[in-house]
Image (tube, rainbow, N blue to C red; front, side):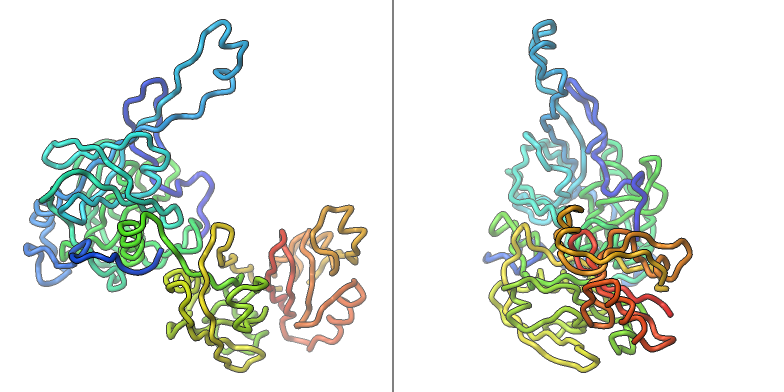
Amino acid sequence: MTLDSRFRRRLPLAAGLVLVLVALGAAFGYGRAATTPLWSDQPIAVAPTTVSAPDWVALAQALKPAVVNVSMKRAAQATPEALDPFFQQFFGRVPPRVQRGLGSGFVINADGYVVTNNHVVDGATEIRVKLADGRELAGRVVGRDPRTDLALLKVDAHGLPTIPLGDSAALKVGEPVMAIGNPFGLEQTVTTGIVSATGRVIGEGPYDDFIQTDASINPGNSGGPLINARGQAVGINTAIVSRSGGSVGIGFAIPVNLAKPVVSQLASAGHVTRGWLGVGIQPLTADLAKSFRLSQTDGALVTSVNAGSPAAKAGLKQGDVIVEYDGRPVGRAGDLPRAVAETPVGRAVPVKVVRDGKPLTLTATVGRLEEAREAKAEPAPGEPALGVTARTLTPTVAQQLGLREQRGVLVVGVNDGSRAEAAGLKAGDIIAEVDHRAVASVEDLQQALRRHPAGAPVLMLVQRDGDPLWLAVGA
C-alpha cells in the first residue's frame, strides 16, 4: 500500500506547552533472561467468554489504570538566523528552542516497565510518565528500536497495574477492539472499533505487518494499547492515514507478537540483535511466476545475493524463489525479512527454493544484521506489458553519465501506453538480462527478443538506482 506524502505515516505527538516553539510533534530475537516473566498473557477476569459482545465498560475500568501519558522535551534545531553572528550582534544569543509533546504508553510489568513508540521519545532530553492515579514520574529509556518504532521505558515504581499481552496472530478481521490513549492531550480517552485488516504494509520498513483498525486514533494515541475483547493488548497504536491530522477511521497498530521479542531484548540488552541472510528480494507477479515456471505467486524472488553473505555461502542465486524458510512457508516477500530477523545469529536453517522450476533445499547459517545490511522487499512491478528507446551501455558512456554499471542496455525512453511502460520499465533502467541470458548491447537485446517464444512474457533483469529488479514484460 502506498500512502500519499501528505498522509501521516506515524502519529505525531499531541500538542503540549513550549518555551519558545509550539510543536505538534513529532526485532526481533528471543526472550529475556529473567526468573519472572516480563509480562502476563492472562485475560482480564471481567472479559466475556465470547468476542462478539465485549463488556467495554468493565474492560475500560480494569485497564485504564495501566495506560500512561508520556510527555517529553527535546531540543529543537536552531534556525540559521539564530546562529548567524550578525544576527546575534543585534539581538543577542537566542536561547535554545524546546519542543514538548505528549504520547501514550502502557505498563506491562508491575515494577514499572512501560511500552511506547520510539518516535514518542526519540531525541528526548527529559521524559515524564503520568500514571492514571495522578503521579508523575521520571521516565528512563531502557532501549529503543527505530526499525519497529518501539521503545521500553522504566519508572521508579512498584505494584503498578498492568495490561496482559495477547496473541495478535489470532486476530480476525471484523473482531472488536478498543484503543486507550492520550489523543490531543485528552487523558484516558477510550475508543472502540473493529480490526479492519491485518498484515498491512504501509512503507515504514521491511518489517511492516500492521493491524488496521477503525477505532478512533489521533495524534497523542502513539504508544497506547489496542485491546481485544479478552482484555489483552494485541497491538501498539502507531500511525494513521489522514489529510487533516485527525482520525478518518484508518489507523495502524504494531502487532504485539512482533513487539514481544523486541521488548524482551530491549529489557535484557537495551538493543535488538537481528539475523541477516544477505539477499535482495521482490514479490512475484503472475507473469513473473510463469516466467520462473511456478504455478503460484507465493514466495520471495531473489534479485541479488551479497558477496560473502550467509546466502552466498549457502548457494542461493539470483533468480531463486524462496518458498520456505526454517520450516515456515514464505507466502509473501515481506514474510522473509521478518522470519530472518527473528532467527538467532549463528543458527543453521534450511531454506527451500525453486530454481529453474525444480525444488532445492539449502542450508544457511544466519549472520548478524548490521545497520548497512537489510534485506528489502521491492515494490511489485506494475502489470507487465515492450516499446523502448535504448542504447548500448559502455564504460565510457557509464562514466559520462555517472553510472556504476558498466555493461548492459540503457533505457533512454519509454513510449506512452507501450508494453514496456505497462511492465514498469523506466528511463534510466539498465537491462542486464533477458530470459536469464546476459545482454551487453542493443543488438543482444534484439536477438534475445527474436529468440523469445511468442505469446509468453519476456523476463528481464534490470538495474534501477543500483539495485536489481525482475520484470516480466507481457506479450
